[in-house]
Length: 160
Image (cartoon, rainbow, N blue to C red; front, side, top):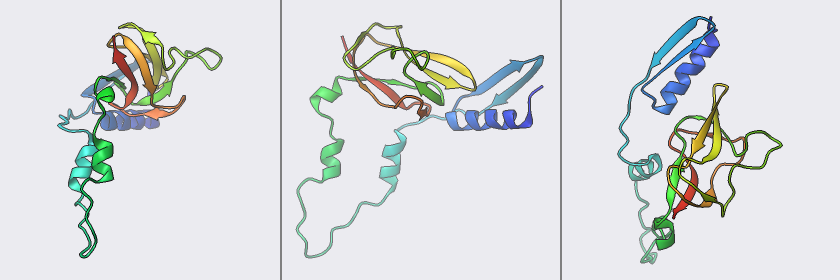
């Protein structure tokens, strides 16, 4: 039988992850939680930035031709070729199968499609996250044992 706290945690995870539904069976008990599916048209950071009013120049001060925000938001040609590997679930990111083991991959490693890159633990289940493209790992975003959100970039891979 599920405890009330466990059911509440499941509801929170389903609600925050955007998963359509989850069904869990444990010790002869089964619980099904249906969430809302969401269609996201733009990344959350971009929509928040779009909702915020643009700062207005102070009269009498010179206006720069380009702003730092605009310049930093522009991707370099090198970054445009990269492929993000995102988390399919909310959970805890682990780079290795156990604390004493070497990480699955490091920056500079070549990975094949289907190769395990990391583990995301969700509700005591270890979910192996696999590369969806072959290429070279360029960046690892989260630190080991850091919580990650649904859709959050975990790795950047330069396609082969």
